[in-house]
Image 1 (cartoon, rainbow, N blue to C red):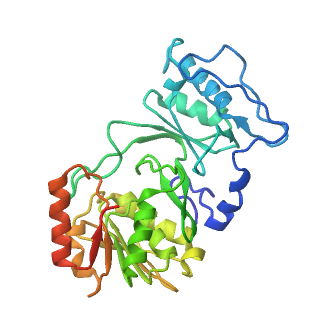
Image 2 (cartoon, rainbow, N blue to C red; image 1 turned 90 degrees about the vertical axis):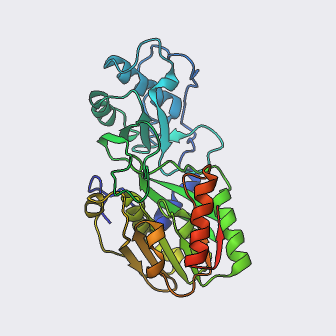
Length: 343
């Protein structure tokens, strides 16, 4: 599919993405890179060139160029440390055991300091940059469910901020794409405790229908599908979460055993009602798995569910709000039944 943000070829099928992983961020024999103190400004050196053999460049050299451009435009002072430039989000996101050597267009920069002028220069002058996002306060997504409000977003200033994270499951890896300015960061760090909790719940219950009631970009729903659950239903009140869940079913269709996914609403359509109350069917996929994606308040979802739901994951952002978590869990058990777990 074409990228819904830039119209380009940013979204690869999972097998093609996985094929690049073993050496995605590894240096070739000709690579060279300098390590800088992140707590100090970088040295006043000309930008290091990408490796002539593999076109990769060490991340510290990339960030030194990013820092220099931001200092030239006044986003940073000459005394600011290298770390002040922002947070690197590599594409594809994998668990890294050493600092990466970055190929072209493999980095989304998330920064509080960056302005539009700098962002345009960064995309034009730094070959590793694919997109620049200015982050605001809080996490992108729903502020309060049941309000039909606008939610919270960061701001894409230049380029494209679509990137993928790769998560391992006991049945093999899954690729989870997202637009980083409107979806929370969920970077891989080896074994994922939420996926492990999902695997354990599925192994214990052997469900025929699994509901991921707060799906985000679809990680747990995808895990349920590749782990063999015959029917998977994903839902999220945030428009971007529901849309990217639908996209990710298509990306992982081979592992899921579906022919493809029918996406019924564009992201532009869904963005007209960013935080949904009444659930709307967003996507359908059929084959070895029967998969549905909804955009709506989970408390209004039960009438749309099959008669028997064996297992539900409720992964609220507000896990620290014990009373809210208890209230929603009790409601779900009474309205839907089956086993409920909090990943």
